[in-house]
Amino acid sequence: DAKTTQPPSMDCAEGRAANLPCNHSTISGNEYVYWYRQIHSQGPQYIIHGLKNNETNEMASLIITEDRKSSTLILPHATLRDTAVYYCIVSPLRGTASKLTFGTGTRLQVTL
Amino acid sequence: DTAVSQTPKYLVTQMGNDKSIKCEQNLGHDTMYWYKQDSKKFLKIMFSYNNKELIINETVPNRFSPKSPDKAHLNLHINSLELGDSAVYFCASSRGGSNEKLFFGSGTQLSVL
Image 1 (cartoon, rainbow over the protein chains, first blue to last red):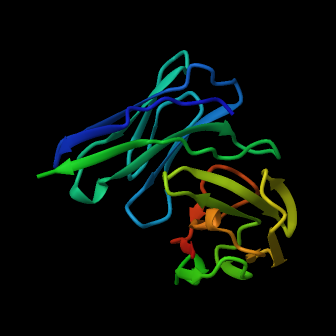
Image 2 (image 1 turned 60 degrees about the horizontal axis):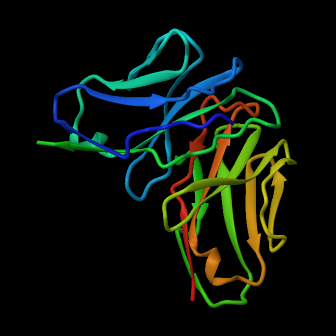
């Protein structure tokens, strides 16, 4: 699996947009970009995923650069409940070789 | 109803004991997983089963034996527990073996004394 690089921590004021970057310069053509988050003492939670087009759902938006070497997860209006560790992962969608390998992630702290 | 449920939530035991962690999902998914999160918070896949068939088996000691009686259940049995086995173990499931959307349980915190 391709490796990803994320900043270890970020702060965001409540109500503001949180923009979490991720570098994945060695991503392969069949690998998707996935974002999960882990709130303290809970299991990871799926947020969003994409291949090359930008994606949006009820939780967040995912912006993938044209060369696919980096992406940004956007939480449009962060709340205190969004405080968590956010993981950016690249992996094929399916196949016996595909598995989600979690790195160290970005610890997002949302403050008042 | 909880989508992926694990029991027990906490497990404290002595070195050398044998213990099991149970996992059940009510999502109708085909694939189930076990992940281990160590004290440094690294989350690593251990096993993956698709329709009761083992498809991913990472470098895990033989003391760990997953068992899938049906596609809704994936239990983890650990023999001869060691101090290094202390961690949080997460069960997860997904549809059709796809990475698209894994649903995780709330974890089992195992402490080996």
